[in-house]
View 1 (cartoon, rainbow, N blue to C red):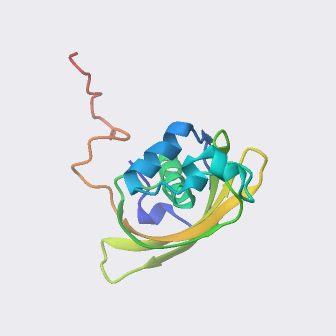
View 2 (tube, helix red, strand yellow):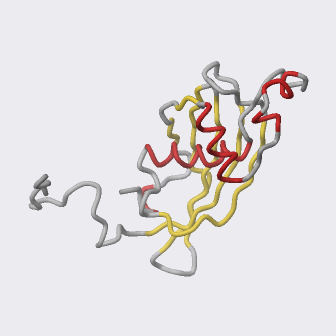
Length: 166
């Protein structure tokens, strides 16, 4: 279960594990979005571009940044809404590159609804060489308490571990 609003403090920093960009990622993203631009899908074409070969779709990095944040259990089940994203693409990401995200809490403030708060996150996506490939920010509406119906995460004191019968 992700963090709740009160567990975010401006200036907190998180570093995610790495994730290697695969052929399947690029093809899957092309199929999902319908973006079959040859710079992503045609090696012969892409070799003739300034990139010198195929590159991953830029927006795929945004989704991966949020997925990497989920691996740290920052927002799963506690984010109510994504309010906005601003993103810059600094360098190409290629098949075989391994990316990770450095995430900094840039904002944490109250909103009208007393059950929620606004959290701003700044993302830096780095490749295996430490090159900044993407950077951006997101504003999230976060819960102040964990949903009672959540079925994952830490057990409360006194709760029994639930075992599968299969």
